[in-house]
Image (cartoon, rainbow, N blue to C red; front, top):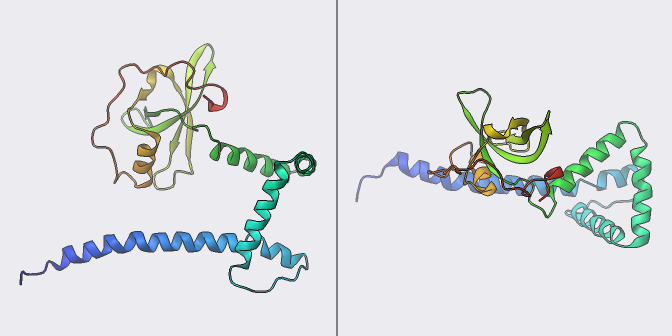
Length: 212
């Protein structure tokens, strides 16, 4: 019997275990969040809520379904629009609601949120950062792109910077490939990245609000 390489066996087991543990933890956390999303408010309102495992998930999904039905018919739209107008008039709460709604509309839009993956010199001129073209604008008749640079591991945060069109380097990376690289902290990356010869994004690919 060949000598066992304890280190390699341990590392192999670790690489198998970590994805399983992370997956279970994420699923458990999400289920816990959904389960406790509505029930605490119902209890505070005095609504009798029996402590049955999974009841919160059922209640939450039911409310989401009902709201979806309301939002798709005429009277429901009118009611939700009136309710929204009341919320928007409340100081602070209105701003939070509006910002959250816009974020949700952006994240779940059927249109592609980012058009191209680019390299920009950030945070200083001697380094490059992966970024996504989010929009374009003109400043004093000069063309600029708004580039979103996600933070590694946690791409929900990052920087939105304005870069001159001529300073943008467009790559052949897809949005999915770039996101895998960012989420993995650079561990997963396409080994050969091609740069497009022409750094100009074809007209019509980016317009107001990043819509194509």
